[in-house]
Image (tube, rainbow, N blue to C red):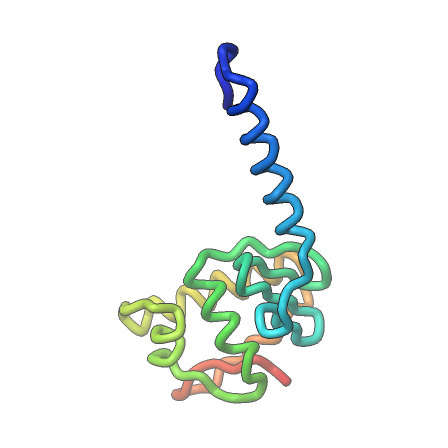
Length: 128
């Protein structure tokens, strides 16, 4: 937002900053910043998630939980390791609620989504 009485140097500085931001968005991402597993695409720099090219709106906690699961597909991650990766200290039942919300968000984009598997008594895993 700019007021009517903005000076020309200030206006030019703001426009220049906008162009720099646009250029930064166009820059290719380093391979370690983008995680792709099948139809899943996670960008750790921008904290964005997409499933089959459709953006998935995840909270910060949900993003890091999905990232942890997808980074090592087929490996079981217990609730404690999911909390650690999401920098979260909560009751274990809360992790179950987070996973339920994550599944619901992905299912909204693709009704056949079933990549997060519950391993009874152990935790969760991303299907390989």
